[in-house]
Picture 1: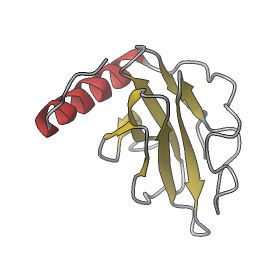
Picture 2: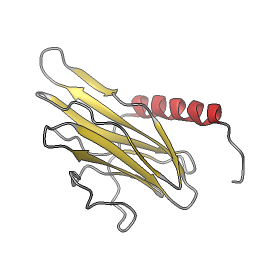
Picture 3: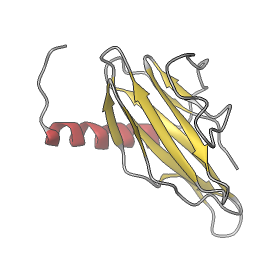
Length: 141
């Protein structure tokens, strides 16, 4: 596309994409791409990937149960990803962003680790700005 973006425009895109993901709900996960991510990363959670075009996001889990979202983009696909949490039972709530939104272009980035305790599930949602595709991975409880 060859257009220049300012830092403010990238942040605006991330906010708009997060809003669209939260409003759109969950999409079925596409088959994971192979050879494009570090699936062998310590704590990788299999089966929770989100794939949208040439962008992929996945979850890592530490021994204390906290989770982290990681996103990667290749072949000039611009993407935004965010970690979401849902709680069930007393004091529960629907899917809510618990991390910042991260904009990636031919790169990889990650959120910090976030709590994923009793009655709480986490998932990663991904929006491909280049193609308009979006996906949320399976929830991890």
